[in-house]
Amino acid sequence: MKEDGIWCRDHRSRTYTFPEALERIRTFHGHVAPGLVIGLKMVDLARRHLPENILYDALCETASCLPDAVQMLTPCTVGNHWLRIVDLEKFALTLYDKSNGRGHRVFLDPAKLAAWPHLYRWFYKRRSKADQDFDALLENIRQAGADCLSLAPVEILPALRARRSKGPIATCPRCGEAYPVAHGDLCRGCQGQNPYGRT
Image 1 (cartoon, helix red, strand yellow):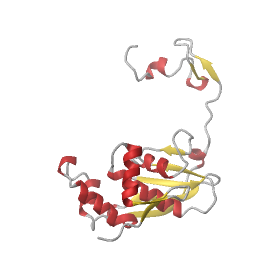
Image 2 (cartoon, one colour):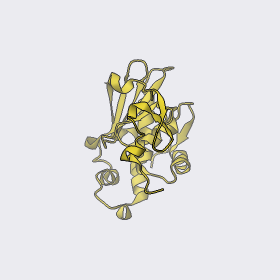
Image 3 (cartoon, helix red, strand yellow):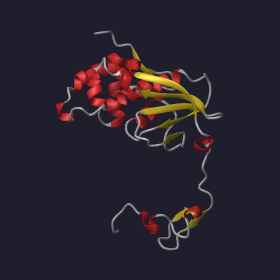
Image 4 (cartoon, helix red, strand yellow):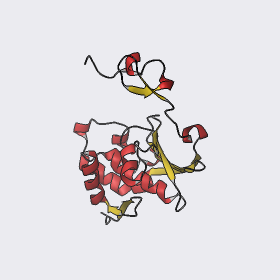
């Protein structure tokens, strides 16, 4: 077994060994999720390919695990709108220059998974969670590191880089709450998009 070195770095240049990364995941995410362990390595790889001292945004192609990896290691969050999720259900993320949209897309590369059978079976859901050897899966992830990833230069479409404003705000005549006028004569909740049952 090779010695654990640096698994990832955050935007403040703090480094984490593999065990430290697992503990940080437990604290942030609630449990050690294999996708998040790989996600930290993906974010680290993408950050290392960005020019120094630029402002950057992030795009995740899945809503599962990768957004948390981005939020753990970068200043990009869903709340500050520097992290966007375009849910293609692909295990990929991109970090890119805010000013021009140029960056690097990192993805878990199926063509590179043959050397890590537990990682392969996990990724392709060949075994139920109960039948997986979790420790062997984590060891496969640690051994694979960035070797199971691929990186490609990309340019984010201008429409996805544009900052969206809510525009003018009004009070909904039905529920009495504030909402963006662009949504129509009623707020979306009163238009039938309310996620709650009767209140």
